[in-house]
Every structure is written in structure tokens, then in C-alpha cells.
Amino acid sequence: MSDNNIQIFDTTLRDGEQVPGCKLNTEQKVIIAERLDILGVDVIEAGFPVSSPGDFKSVQAISKIVKNATVCGLTRAVENDIKVAAEALKYAAKPRIHTGIGTSDSHILHKFKSDRNTIIQRAFDAVKYAKSFVEDVEFYAEDAGRTDNDYLARVCEAAIRAGATVLNIPDTTGYCLPSEYGAKIKYLKENVKGIENAILSCHCHNDLGLATANSIEGVINGARQIECTINGIGERAGNTALEEVVMVLKQHPYLNLDTNVNTSMLFGMSQLVSDSMGIYTQPNKAIVGANAFAHSSGIHQDGVIKNRETYEIINPKDVGVTESAIVLTARSGRAALAYRAKNVGYELTKLQLDDVYANFLSFADKKKEINDNDIHQIIETSKAFSQIISA
Ligand code: KIV
Ligand code: ZN
Image (cartoon, rainbow, N blue to C red; front, side, top):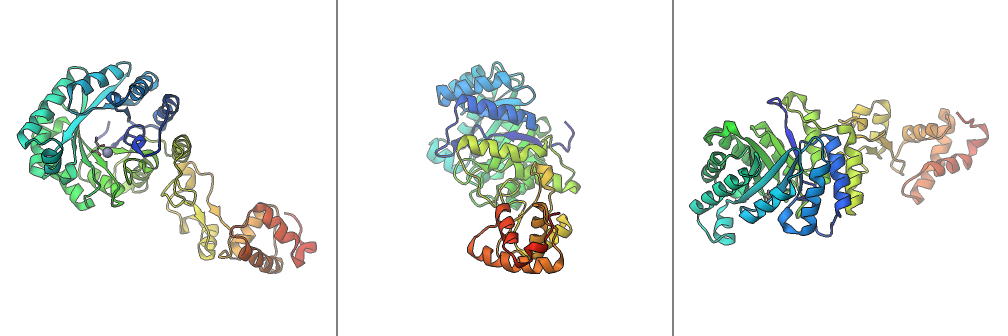
């Protein structure tokens, strides 16, 4: 792995699967995991094995079939969780145990009714115990986003002393501003003893819509792994969207950070996850939404027809979308109508276009969106039809 390579840790099957109403069976999870492996993610978090027999079975089945990626199982800082995860992961070519504990004062006082030193000891013990099963152990400091940096650094040092290979710094509640999260990663990079022996990981939730921005700030400031889900699904407002961070890094090459993801599979991957989970993707979703490459206003359509880059910063083919869509509505202009008419077989002269356009507007005012069949009908019912020759 080069120093500029960002590891993509996909948690669609764990944090993503925590979406209310979503339940995937083992077969569906295996299909998604196989596809994630081909997509080129570096780590697949397959589940939380101790949470249910079904999750255990899924993590085990995924461990058996994944060829390239590391397969990871989540645990609390509890011996039995760790033992069960190790058992579920035993067939994985590259197993990782992901263990951790809450580190913010809120978690320490209210959730654990404990104190800071005891939490550090529990973090150390959990990592040490996980290391007795696997070499690759990731430690998470839950609610790191609201944990003060000085204490967080001490927790991280303990995890590294116990052998952690990755330190996950979750903004569990999606509270941090990008500058704050970036500064946290920078602080840890500069102040944690032994940090050269571990990589820092960003795990950002989207409660304020900042998950992608925070993850990007994290890697700009030295983190080398991003935890994310397809379509950004996950607890509450979700996790960092995989397709977004991957494309941000690809579209900004001067950042000099890249991933191993085959971006041309992103759209298909998004549809597979959305269909399997029965969770609809919002049309305006960045990168993979139905409207991400659709142009509907006349001014934009004219610009895109002249040169796609006028209004598109991503080539749709780069993410597996065949082409940009010129959507015909009453807001569309002549250029869009001529373009779509040509696609269905009519080359219109300027005069013919004027006539057909008038007919189109009265259709479009009645019908929200004009499809290819409507275009035939609009042309056939226009005054100029007898002179229009199919292209
Ligand atoms: O958001 C979070 O803190 C988590 C941890 C369990 C890694 O999902
Ligand atoms: Zn999370």
C-alpha cells in the first residue's frame, strides 16, 4: 500500500444494515460481499457476530467466499464478543477483529458508569485479547468526535501498546465540523506515541450532513482509512457514502490520494444494495441518484448538449451510468427537443423545430415529463409532420 492510498472499509453489512426496517438474509449478504470484493474495497465489515446467530452465520459465510478484501467482525470490549467474532472469522483469508469502547465523558459516565482510567484499561485488555486470535486488530473509540483530544490520545496509545493495527476515530453522533474533525486527526497523528505503527481511520456519521466532508478532512490530515457504506445508509442519518468519498478523491487528483475502487461499478453497486435492502435511494443523491446526471432546465440542457462538461464534473461512464439524461419538461428548450427527437429518429430543420416545439410545450404543460413515445406523438400531430423525414 502506497502512502497515498486510502483504504476503503465498507460497513454496509454492519453499520449500514442497522437501518430501521432493513433486514438482509445471509444469501443476500453474501451476494453483496462478493460484489464489494470485486468493486475493490479493502475491508468488508461483515457484521457483529455475537449479536445474533444469523449475524454469526453471515460473517462466517462471507469469510469463506471473500477472496481479496480483509473480512472484519465488530465486537464490544467484552471477551465473549471477541471470542465469538474470532470463531466467525476463522475461515477468512484476512480476518480482522474490530473492538472498542466509548471514550467520551458522556459514554464513560452514563453508559458505563465508569471512569477514564478504567476505560483505558478495558481498551488495552480488549485489544490484547483480540490479538490472541488474529494479527489484525482495529480499535474504535466510540464517540471520539466528542472526546477531548488529550484523553483520546491516551486511549489510542494504550490500544497501540496492546497491538492495534488500526485506530478508528468515530464521529458517532455526526457532531464535528470538518475543521474540528481534521484537527482531531492531526492532533492524534502528532501526539500519540507509537502512531507510526497504526493507521488512523475515519468513521463519520451524517447527522448534520457532514459525513463526507469530515472523512475527506480526516484523510487530508493524515488518516489512511475511511469507513463508509454504499448509498450512505446506516444508523439515523447514515454513514459516509462510499461512492462520494471515492469520487471526491478521484475528481481532485491534486490531493494525491487514491483508492482501489473500480468506480465504473458504483452505480450497479448502489442499485444492488438499494434493491436488496428495499431502501429507495433519493433521486438527488450525489453520484448514484436517478437525477445525478439528468438535466432538465433549458439553459443547462443547451450547455450539456454543446459540451457535457459545462454542467457535469463527472463523466457518467466513470461511475457506471451509460449517459447523461436530457429530461424533457415544460422547462426544456429547443436544443433539448431537437436532441431527443434525433435520438428517436427525426432530424428537424429550424422551421420544423419551431412548429414541433409549440406542440411540445402544450403537451409538456399537461404532462410532467415527456418520454420517447410522446415525442413520436408530438411530431406526428404537429403541422410540419408531412415534411419531416425520419433521420
Ligand atoms: O459509530 C460508531 O461509533 C460505530 C462504532 C461501533 C465503530 O459504529
Ligand atoms: Zn457507526
